[in-house]
Image (tube, rainbow, N blue to C red; front, side, top):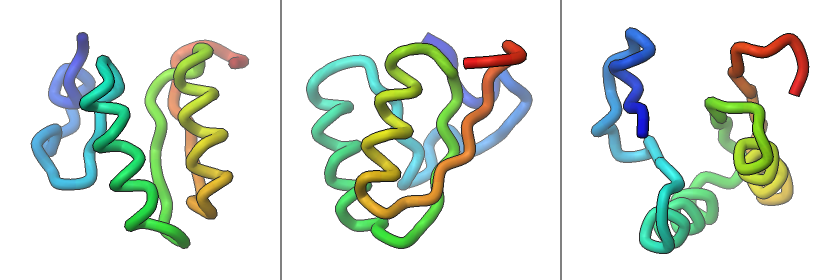
Length: 73
């Protein structure tokens, strides 16, 4: 699994940076979403999981920017 530093971005250990690899990550992401209503998020990846994460964020009133290498999701 990739970390932000592999994209040339520092901060993978920041408090509101979430990864989704297992149930513990998902639980943490829900906690962060619930405490960040009205905020903004960046989702890296435009596959199925990235799209589902973006949808969950928007449902929680969080503005989303998606970053992915492909021309389309």
